[in-house]
Image (tube, rainbow, N blue to C red):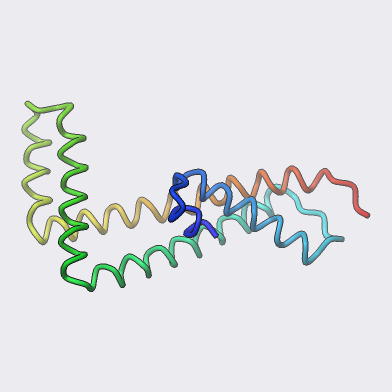
Length: 143
């Protein structure tokens, strides 16, 4: 669900919180008599974030196998980094980082770093949305 929301131009943060929340909503539809606590919702949302990370990684891996698209992704990421580095034009560490990301090895390390960071963020935001869903639906009266 979150991958589709991101393709529809929703920010990844909102999409991940929505994923955790929707995981609780869908679980509650299948199990209406179970009281959902925020901790259980957070675990469910974190699992949803993990699944979303896996799907997103799989899609990006397939896209990266196409040489033309891989070059476009590299150029786009380096362009984003250059825009971010424009705020510190005189910093030698920023310039060294930009030079490193232009190399194939540096680009791979940058992707690994961003992959690990996005895994953590996806799981945390999914857990936040799940906890929110658990808090909202845990207070509901049972029918």
